[in-house]
Length: 206
Image (cartoon, rainbow, N blue to C red):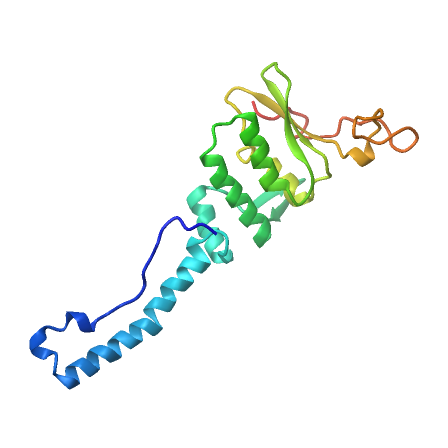
């Protein structure tokens, strides 16, 4: 993991004892005891804070919720009238995607890289540019309820300004296609039923 900052949690109280008291055993003993307490508690606290909160790769649920507040990414979504809450790793992945989203320009290669990050464990996902100010997000897998809930939150998916989009579900093993198309052959799968993820019956990305 690449760190975005370096930190030093060590303490050295004895160096602040002026030279006149360098031989004062009782004073130095008290300062050493205080230093040992800080080494055992203060250092441990900040190490845990970095691991459990500041590092998005290792953050606990508490830390991820803080990241979600910083990045304005909700953890609970409504789908088909049911509130769906993302588990720890799903939410971590979504937050990583949000960080990526903040530094991208919205080009097709960048959006494809983003989709690869978010959906790499599920299957292929990519952009189809229709060349008419619309585009399609193509998912070659059936998304889970949690993924569907995230997809319906339109702030999650990047797109150029003014472009409308649809989210198409096209698993190759479940759709008929001619030889060389990557889809399934004759008598093995039906034609594509134009399955798309939408909010109601409206096209997304207005």
